[in-house]
Length: 543
Image (tube, rainbow, N blue to C red; front, side, top):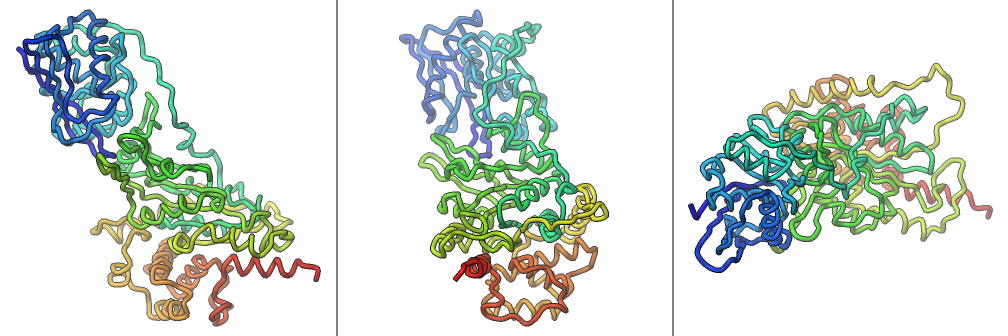
């Protein structure tokens, strides 16, 4: 038999495409040709496969060998085609029965000694194989844990090419030395949630209310205040308030983490929302995804269905931070390259933390700011207006008041998480016949048409919009936030009081009852950090 076929998977972003690996042995001088748009690492498979076959006590054909990867128009990248190429080649040479290869998908990188090394994206490839109707897949043993997360497909974790050939022949599988885990270029601590509890945070009633609302409705959050006031403490405890992921979301998040190299050999399904906290010096490709060849997921995709926390946000390059604009609205990111366009999911909860100025004391009741007005304005403008307009909740976090007693022991994470879970259940029931799950996901026109506010709440927001305090996007975000506050209270819909509180959370004003508020217009309504900081600085001057 001079021709044989095998199946593997090509990944374009997170989307898997079946690839047919064909091997043809013909008369002619010994030469191996690989066709089908392979990249450099795949072209090197010819030498890896030749050495692996020889070191597995099999004979490599000494004739003209042509290996084709179809569809030929689909770019192929990576070394995970090695085992499929070797199996197709040996089936063409009559070493194994080629009929068995037609029923199984094969992925894995070959070492020169015939060992099978782990690869990235095994979970996404297994999902693609399962959706294409395959019931069996051969993967490296180090990837078998994540591949078995996919239901309805039988996974064979193999250590070497010799074991794969024995499986295809129906022989007893020989014993091999256990594989050694490959070094990882991405820290696994990125997705490890901090072991912290909300009852560690003393005081900060407004900050606690803000993260509770953010967790309940999936609302983006901006915390600003002096160093040591508790911004990072609140952000880290936000993850514990969010409920476990659904089964579909768990598979999707696990597939992204598999492609990013975050899953270990004993991988389990990611059931908790990920918490990703890139450093403020992170590059643009590391944040949105990219890299040479086929793009890889970035931090925003690794934070899918979880939290993306950027501490010291003004220190991040403004252009890098502004790339979050589109994903915040669409819930996905497209990375364009000449060869292909990779699409990754990116529906995350953004949490920004910032100091009010370089010295960190602007707008604080006890600190003395040493920054000039020019430095202050330049620092605060590093987070652009369009980014702030996409953030639902903005809170100033000041140091906790002194004199806290044991009687004021705050609620724990478990207590607040129970309210958040109940609020999410109400949202799931309300949107049960729609493609949305959380209040933050509902489009503005649908929100206004299908889930309108009461007349008094509507008139209040229309007044703020007429005064220029709210943009059209801000109008819808306040309405979504009001629905979340109503869900937390167990009400059928937002009241005027809750809508007022939602506007305060959005604008950054202190949370005061509706009866205590005054009609605020023009400059008084613009409760921005810039004005507060400038007032504080002027009051600190001795002249």
